[in-house]
Length: 116
Image (cartoon, rainbow, N blue to C red):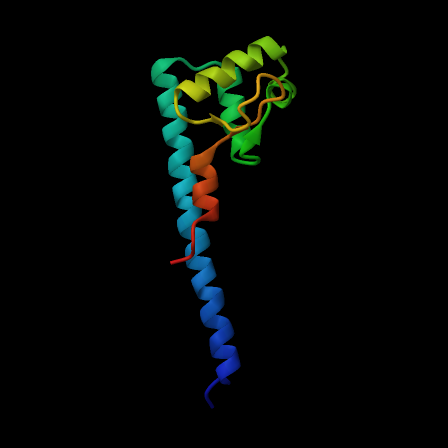
């Protein structure tokens, strides 16, 4: 007996989403590796590393949040944010002098990409 068309449709959708999730995970793992290698080739501190790890859980960050995540002063967090900005990991998106928000656009691009 053949499965009903609805079951076939459902299983095809699950398979497509599973393949897509696997592909995105691979892209995110490769990007994380690249970020860590790029930062290490220039300079890497424990703060930089902690922020890179955090960005894969939450791809937006402020200096205040970075200070909390890394357990450092806001000045040290600001320095680490600038390192990541210089490396192309983060982009400031508010255009303000205070309460700036930084995004890890490459991470967001992978997450938000259309399913092939």
